[in-house]
Length: 102
Image (cartoon, rainbow, N blue to C red):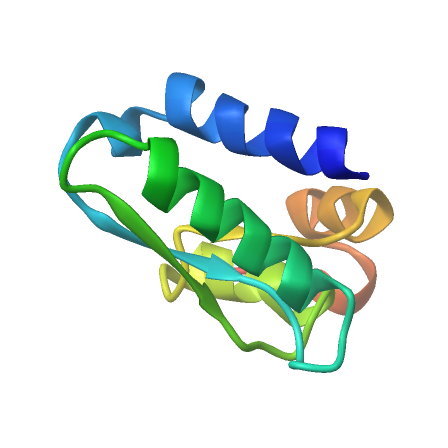
């Protein structure tokens, strides 16, 4: 799991054009007791340590997997953690996202 988190953070640093500029990024996680919050906190720590000068990331407490695609679509967060089936439903605008995730 640690390798996965590090790989995700490295990908964010290298591939995400938002990180080429000084910015504070917000990553949607889950509740403090959920598994996604510590994951988001770890990703944030790695981005803060190894990211572009002046860039930072903060974990945001959210409702979790179902809410995160909606927050991403509305612009309330810049990056969000969810699972693959909910991400696919959100992109297609079906299931819990019938009205779209925007």
